[in-house]
Length: 370
Image 1: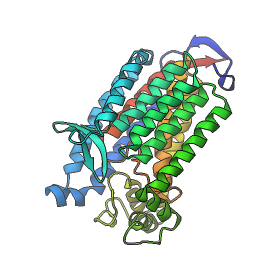
Image 2: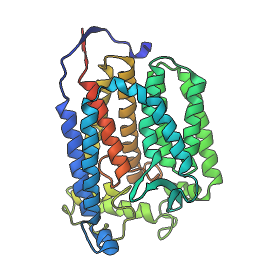
Image 3: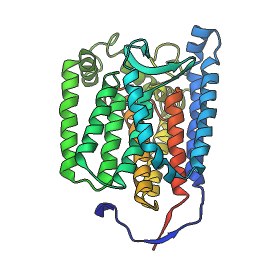
Image 4: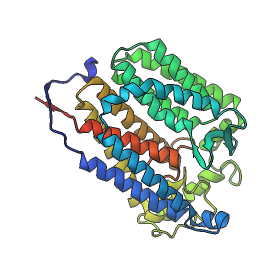
């Protein structure tokens, strides 16, 4: 076990006790997300399908499926997941390759991110978040090797960037580095990977007109108000319109086709407009509390696999939430990352709920401190 994470503990595992506070927080965010998706999607749903509850019904189905997966993960012994680490990694890598093939991967908005089987579609890049956490936790709980870690991370990053999906790439890379650090990696190794990532990211921005435009828009949001800057300007208008207490639930004006991606990446802007600064801060505090709770569970895990798994799941959800919220308040460029539990979308929601179920499973076998 890494010296930086060593702790004096007894060998006695506390009796199984569900972390109801974390369960309540996850359920609360999920139900709130369902309400906000139904609220933010009424205009788009009526325009496209003549049914203002169309997206609400779809999201409700994903919520039901996600909560089913959440329940199973809560009671399925997390140690058995070790057996799934390699098969799931192979399946994820194959899926990430298939999604890039024209005619197999579904293309939308210039990106190939979906695999479809009939009416069912899922995003392999979302599965990659859970896969990398599970595999690294299994791998590093037995040994720690820098080059295999770097090779696997490089393959995943390249495949996800080819879709292209910069936001998910950032979340996967950052989460992987945290798990590696928690396993006892040296600071210079983390710094080396970070440096390579910065150089690679800079190269991608330089050689990609689309990403270069996003960076310039981030640096100067007023440079092209009806073009490249339109999205972030509409987000900021929504935030400013909300004031302290908001315009009222269901009263957003920006969702009337002014705000792009109102139900997905930009749903926080609708929340802030309708519930104001108070509602926006409440969401931020909820995610910060979830992150704190997750790392506390990691510190009390009964074995290295559980500890690293808890660190990885917490980092994944935490990074994704903070990247989304940071983009919404113009602290970082827009990356297209959904807000966990709240944004519309099945793959992200189901996998996030599965991850939280595993985290709660680990918490039920906490080690008692001396």
